Image (cartoon, rainbow, N blue to C red; front, side):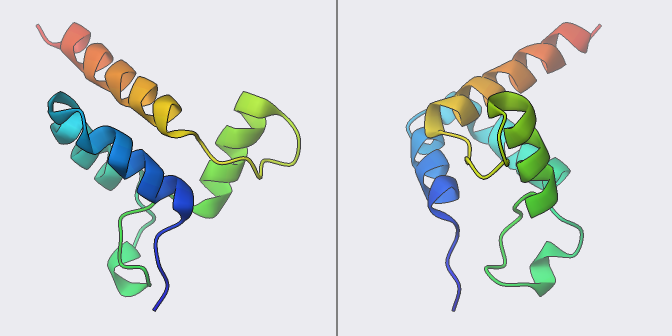
Length: 89
């Protein structure tokens, strides 16, 4: 059985320590999840590999093989939360 990538486990640990980000993390997991994720192992709503590679290339340059760090995921989720709050009437 395949397991979640290391970066995803580390990011989940960082988010687990911040309960205020849990709803945002769940929402973003499903927004970014690869279509049909429930049909493929590891049966987790992870983003497509090509999307992660593109985001990594734009963030760090190079070949796009550097995964996001746990704190970068936390920063991204805070940004998602804040931008959603700003858009509310």
